[in-house]
Length: 479
Image (tube, rainbow, N blue to C red; front, side, top):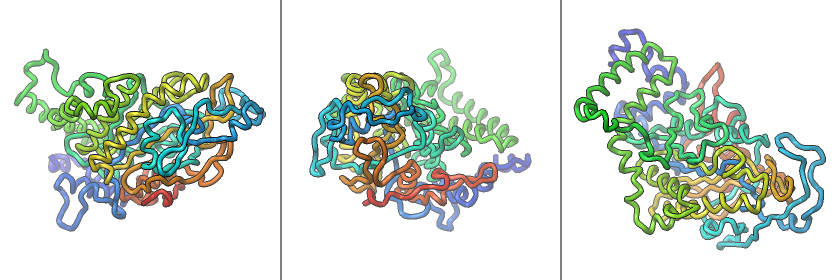
């Protein structure tokens, strides 16, 4: 087939990636070819060995709280809010992205207590995470550049506030390739009630080759991956007939793609078709949660409300990384005004249900990863796109706040029980150790063996990178 493409004067995938990705693209390609058994004997690395330095992390699970989880009602205890409750101390003019003028200072309606050997303060809405609170490292002064969901979600996922840029999972897939030939490298498990703000833009490959975009899997439907097998009405599409059909289509698609090398979507379609054929053997087993023990299901809360859905997806994330998926993103909450972390109307009533839905599964996932030895090379991340105001909105709601929010990380290469930064006494702005998405992304890439300044892709005459022209590795939280 390669000879056929050359005879047609077309650019091959190998040529395209080497030319389009610059020096790093060639290195990434070498890893991919090596994983496919195509590297020469000159010492090309296997995919996943780390490209720039020794890697501590091989796979990542990211839990994303969509809508803006309130820090002062979860992990960032602020006794000053109790003392100043009811006072009008907020900005006089409505800031950009606020949906209403700032109201009076509002104390948290939830009790806080210290937990673990670290004595970390945790709200009563997270009783299960309180039990594992010594494991993560906390970034207590995360900040962003906007109070608007869409741009903030883009920024936390892609490093930019505008659409069209690759997300973290796509960059990792591009840089390191696959750990398995039978499962996607980057899988997204969205909330079954709907996609987050920006829809699929959060999982996009942007200007990277399209094959590196996230593979969406609706874990709540049966089967989770539709059309993997022919329907019952197509009894002839089995066995050798099915394989021969796939081969003919593959050859036709490759010839078509060879004449259009600039359109990476064609190569992505071919790659997805090849992967789908392999997943006919691997996916049914990987997605079969009935293979798990009763104790595991009880721990994750998969058989009872309100934890059933998020618990199943967290358990599925563990099964996927065990079987070779490199990056799994699990979302809590769809876009919109309800069933997420966007608690404008009533913090006392709106926050507890969404917190309860993720608390037990999150703690179970971290514990399960540790007990199975998977934390030795897996990174678990809990984050959101921004925080919420210490001032009431309306009666007892909280508005958007880009000023400060909380992220935690646990697992390979992370110092358990430490924290970086702090917010001011009201939890309105950062006070020390300000941390942007650029720093978080640089740290994640560093743990995976990648220098964020050297991971680039040339597009429109610019060597783009995930961290743009910013980013520092957060050494305080590294072991």
